[in-house]
Amino acid sequence: MYSKCGCTNLALSVFETISFKDTGAWNAIISGMAMNGEARTSLKLLDQMVSIGIQPSGPTFVAILSGCAHVKMVKEGVDLFDRMEKVYKVERKFEHYACVVDLYARAGMLKEAMEFIEVKLGGVGGRDVNVWGALLGACRSYGNVMVGNGVWRRMMEMGIGTSDYGVCVVCYKMYVEAGWKREAEEVRNRIREMGMRKLRGVVWWRLMVLLRSLFPVVFVIVRDWK
Image 1: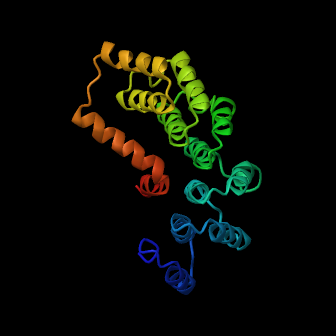
Image 2: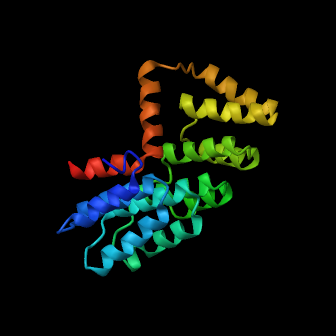
Image 3: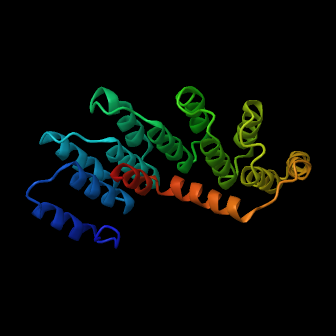
């Protein structure tokens, strides 16, 4: 509760009063620190957690990686990702890979994000439209049409996202804002030819995908809690 209100000091104080801190308690405080921009504190808490023999879980790393992404701690986040299986014995799953893509993208390291998807994500969801779509959106946000064009062309090669209204609109706007009129017209024609429409249900679904990409900690913890 205190973490959600941004009162991290109070959250830490309450956490210290807990006599037996299980994995759930540690995950809660680590997530709380991460969502309030205190990724370094989350990393220190992880060290404390491990030092007393509490095994971290998948959501623990989703929380910290997401926290690192929000404060652009790229090196720390990537190092943690690399140590997950070797040091902490926690299997890396799709959501952890997606967090690293988000980590690179938020820091404006778009080429690195694309390479990570191609090399690391190839076998565990490299054709996921949400990951590629998020990267395309980051390219538009940072005005990097060169990388964004490469992302779009790669998506066309794989046949993913090119019939998705939301993805096409992002791509179209990226080209327009960069002054790439011919490419923008190509995407606009694709939208017309396929008769894409912004349906209410589709808009809601895209909103939920966006929320999941922005707040993965909440989604993963709720999922695992069930």
